[in-house]
Length: 447
Ligand code: HEM
Image 1 (tube, rainbow, N blue to C red):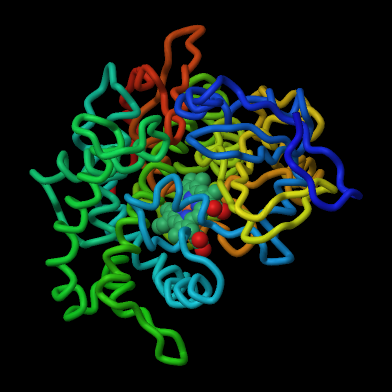
Image 2 (cartoon, rainbow, N blue to C red):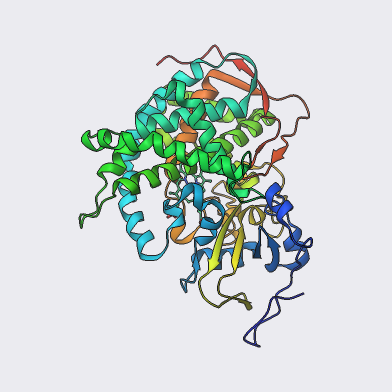
């Protein structure tokens, strides 16, 4: 079957509709559409299918993904995100387009300067230290523990708040909003994933709005204050509504992505003790328990492990777009209104790009190999083009600050032969919570 075509010079787009009525919605809801090579193997770089009540165009491989994300003709908009997560993350930066997106991004950039990042690191370090103090040697469900820590980090670094008793409620509100994105039934009926997502959004709004005045009044070093005070050279700044919308989106964007990256790193470091030791020795060589902003680039091995972990378990496995008018992609006609799924995970696992792609091999990113340079769009964990992650340095800083302290305190172990099973509903996460053993290290440095 082929997508209806207009210009006769364009090729027929291959694809298949999936099951009657529901198409490939089940695969979509389970995440198995994005984390697989099926479409690439069967149809190549551009193909179509049906899912969640829409015709989707699967965009695979670096050429097609790069073309959509670079979007030189300004034809692919972000309303694919609105379709998936709009009710929960409406008017977040990633869901805006065109001149409005550009204006908001310019203001938000003020919250991500290197001065601001250095300022966020101090409360980050304190929160990490306090969080890890509560970890006991022995068995640990790593995912739950690190998710709690990244949530504490978000609330402390983002809002200068210690939400204590409210933490469980806020955490649940985030998770519900994120997981609602891939809900199979997308109507607000009681008990459904979609409905829980809407309730989560309401709770986050109620939590944030009353706190704006205080953050506008003070010159805090947290991200909330940075957004309240951000102003471009021509005086543009955010309204209260903008701040609520951006905060909810940023909390989500930062929280789950960092959590899954830290989880994947912990898993591989536990499986490959020689890499764990190599990273630990680099941290110990810095001579301080907490990470100093000037030392971030000295954690070279940790950087390699982080990159390889994001390749193997791509935290955002795919990103959606929509064609705002008729266009063309690698010679295929894309009709106005078509939704596109840009498969980032697939690029990171292509044997055509990466030698032995399923192997954990951080050195592939080392200066003498740089396998990620084989193609301009071979490695896109943070996306590309105008929507490229604004928080990539923030995220890297947080991840390294956590690992720097963690590795100096504990050795991470997993059972022999253990392999982390992944749940791909919404963003990837370990089905079993990643059971690890924490072995305390007595040679830890003070202060
Ligand atoms: C390991 C960590 C992270 C990963 C893998 C990641 C991944 C991504 C990806 C793939 C996109 C592009 C989406 C698209 O093209 O549609 C994106 C956008 C974005 N990310 Fe991240 N992200 C991470 C951490 C963060 C953090 C820590 C923040 C904020 C503190 C953040 C804020 C954002 C924002 C605001 C956007 C939208 C940018 C725009 O539309 O202009 N991200 N991220």
